[in-house]
Image 1: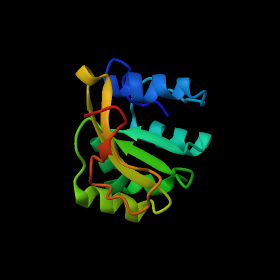
Image 2 (image 1 turned 90 degrees about the vertical axis):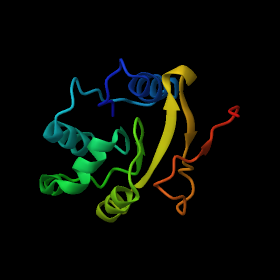
Image 3 (image 1 turned 180 degrees about the vertical axis):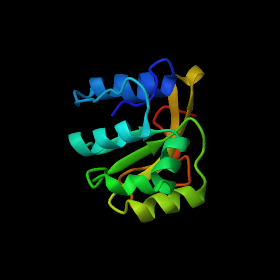
Image 4 (image 1 turned 120 degrees about the vertical axis):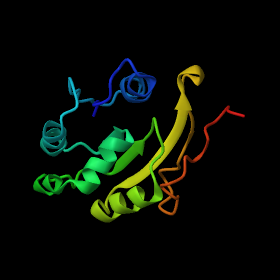
Length: 136
């Protein structure tokens, strides 16, 4: 799902370019609105979410999120700012089927510098992960 602005490096490279490069389908929301976001996840059975911390916090703290079937969500990548360990644990409690983690990057590096290992269930979601290949 593309719910981040494409004028931001995270939305442009991580969400749009990498998804299209992998020939994966992408659902684009013209702007972020909480209920539309949740409805789109449920309707299209979206399994991968690239989010920023306020969106993760919304999914954890708002009661109306429970009105939507979000059981399809399997992988959540948070970036652009750090998530606290408390938020990561609360997300994991509410969505036990989903792996949640973080990455770190910047525009000057053409985005991702480090990210968590989504193949490891024991990887701490509150970590920005390990350096990606070819980064020193």
